[in-house]
Image (cartoon, rainbow, N blue to C red; front, side):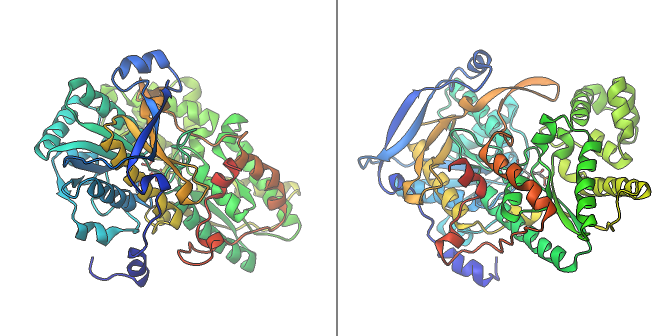
Length: 545
Ligand code: FBP
């Protein structure tokens, strides 16, 4: 990196805040044995060495001398702001335990572990990346670590480098794999610990113990800045309806948080669509109704937020995807040439699902049928739901016009915000939170833990009051159907329609639909009054109010 922006230069000097308990030597306070969130008997049988471990909390302790040890780290899955700070926190944490300790980074995700591609971090490398966005320090990847051969290849390089613990930074799937790896190494008696770290802008890796996955704060603030700017343009020109799709593969936390920050005219929440068993037509009618009502008052403009994963939550399409996943999971399907796959799929779908499949626009249907990520998920970021919906709204309005129930004008603009926020320079919250997660991971390693996720709680309080510790990953698991098989996975946190953030939104949305109540959050600020620079997300505030 040769030329740096002035912000980068100034930001490099920022010293992230740590919870009080991590500022000196720590002692471990252990809770009671834990149980998984579901399918306890089965999960216990699958994880005999890492099941039932206690939740741990770090409290101030006595200074202890540690013999030198080495640690490895992997960035897994989609980028999220703050990843570099997890690494710098871990680096500072292991060096504080013993300056001879070494930290290695495996390149381009879990694949780097298997292929033995790595670097050793130095002060120079770490200092270059402190408080910066992105994962480019070592790169990330979506290779799924699940085969014994991969585990053994990993163990080979970990032994060669004298690594006693591996930290995997990832979302629900990657942390599930971290737990499987921890269990494998424990069962084999390899003496290699594995620690997970909760990352994803999607915000769907959270539960009673994980208050937020890192990156959610910065990404939603970045999208909200952009949405606010669009709203202001929209309210100035008064001639467009802006359809904005927001990343978040499954859960609608990002869309909901952005709605809370910017007060758009419409925000769809996939989980509500599923709960109310809404059809695509009902969703379109809902939006068209709002467009018509505003048009009736001469307001032919507005803003619609659409969660990326919406399509998968529409019950009829959800059923179709579930069957498609099973149909596509067979070796026979894998052998079918790509150009013949649509016909193959059609020949193997049940009658009802085939009817739904045939009713979809051709590009959406082929997107659902063809592309999967390495975890078997539909690549919803490639489906242009914002265009699909606006097209359908336009035809509904044309019909309403013909019937005399709509008199306005409708012209749409489309946007998709995802990549714009995944590598933004971390907000103060993410910079502090991530640094603390990494530093905390070094303490979990030093206390001999494996199969744990690094957790920092009480995050709506000032950083000094944050609670640091670890939660056994098995505690968050249940069995789910993936690629046609029941697998142990971390339960994904979807938006809860009886939760405080959704309830607040639901109490306001009619007002926001009929009026023009836009809020313009502006860009993330790193210096200035605390109420501008250090605010957590509205979601976190409402959940902890
Ligand atoms: P992770 O769950 O791995 O953090 O990634 C989340 C995400 O940003 C989703 O919001 C999005 O659907 C997906 O990654 C896109 O990933 P890719 O760019 O690899 O297609």
